[in-house]
Length: 317
Image (cartoon, rainbow, N blue to C red):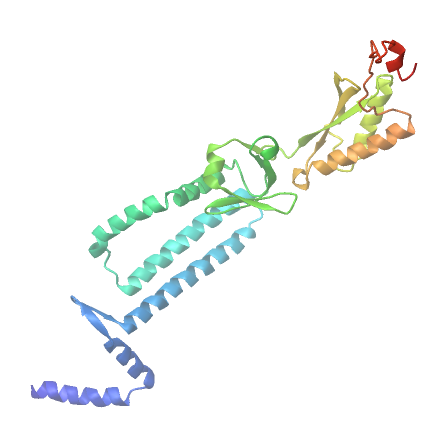
């Protein structure tokens, strides 16, 4: 007992004479309670918070460094850079989490039952999230959709057409020409039909309908329409524009101008507008008429007046 008392007597002056930081740490460690053989204190809570903050900071910093590093690898395409960035980011986060667990001295074997039940609950709750995450990885691996592609999701007038800006963990960002970004879940792109305008080639054909009057020289009209298409800057020389006679309509002979572009991300409506403007000017200068719907009404018999005279109901008689 004397030896123990002597050691205690030596220890007390050391604690009393130590720096304020050591004293504060000692006081924070004393404030707490015991759970079995584990001592839970304010100091322990602060350490846990600091380790969590360090894990998050390391994960975000590592992900940012990975993104900047892969952005410099210009010999890789956009899909390969995005896939590499995601894989490296996942590895960095996993390493940071394992390092945090090691620093906190967490015994994972003691949490086997709890982690199993917790993992099952997380699996059901985040089923869609993990499904979208896996779908995003698959999209990048098979390179069916990659950043920079122009895609159309949906059918008809409800279709969303835009450029893929980013493939995230949960959704893909598609920016339209209206500066609106749609966030489409990755899993939806795996299970629905998607038009990729730049999957194997960036060349897209634009169709421009044009109608002329029935008394028009269609050979001259075709030459003027081809000239209008070639005057547009974005229209490619090869493949060359062509003009097809589509049908004989009620009021006009309907043609379709087929022209090609290789920059669909800049839109197709403006190309159609430019071609039609040139068509209008050339038709006006060369006397080609663009008809409008007309109807001929034939009256077989005018209604008779009250006095029985048929001419009484005729405004021309």
